[in-house]
Image 1 (tube, rainbow, N blue to C red):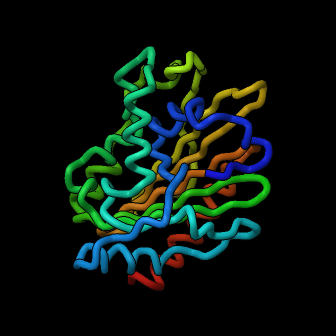
Image 2 (image 1 turned 45 degrees about the vertical axis):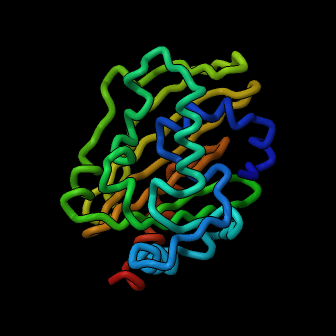
Length: 233
């Protein structure tokens, strides 16, 4: 992923634990496409429901993809990061994005869109699942002890992360939001994330920034939901 200038020097490995905990899946996505089957058709329809821009953040086509969730390039990279990342609290590895490990989600048609500007990177994902699965996903919450953890990778890089819930207006039928905060190379980095559901699909918005991003997270998600309503009904 081509991070904004102020984040570009941070290595992917150093950000790995943040990605794993939050479910951000926009780092390194490629031009992957779904097979020409029913699942692929659904994924393409989800992709049509994505916005093409939000303010100064433009869609980065080369970092966007469609297909079964578990087959996305970005998700596979996230899986690989699990293999090289160690946490002082192993139970926090998938604390926030447990929904992404559900078998029904792994096989679900998915659209991943990445947006970039000088100040931030935004990833938005749409996943088509049965409504009961969407409800189960949105109800998952991290253990209390995962409000702070330390992660290290193979090269010895270690960082401490703090996680806190965000009190934002509900988006869709249900939603929950949080921010993961850390310091990389002396600079504060924050990853804002929201998971929401609308009927039988899940959506996630993740915003990587060095600035306060609560309003951007809420605004993008609300605008995305409006676009989804027009296309998906």
